[in-house]
Length: 140
Image (cartoon, rainbow, N blue to C red; front, side):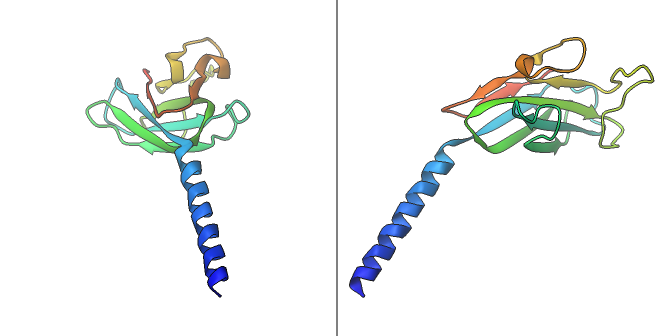
C-alpha cells in the first residue's frame, strides 16, 4: 500500500511538472490600436497562423474602444509564427463593411502595419512568438 502511495505521488508530481512546463511555453500577445477614429462600436481582432490565415482564426477577440484606443490580450499562445488582422466595427454589425467596388469602408490594420494593395499577405503581417510575451501596436 505504501508503494502504491509513492507511485501515485510520483505520477502526480510528474503530471504537475509537465503541465507547468506546457504553460511556461505559452505566451501572451498584447495588441494596442492607438488611433481608432471614434469610440463608437468595437475593434475585432483575429489571430492567425500561416495555415489558417484569412480563413478561421485560432483566436479572436472583440474589444471596446476608450478614448479612441483599443487594447486586447491573446493568452496561452504557443511559440510560433502568427499574424493579426483587426478592424473597427463602427456600426456594430460584427463584420467588415465594403463599398460596392469592394473597398473596405471601415478602418482596418494588421501586424507589422503592412499596407499592401490587394488582400493581406501572411508574410507581410508575420511576427514571431518565442521565449517572451509580445506587445504590438497596430495603426489604422
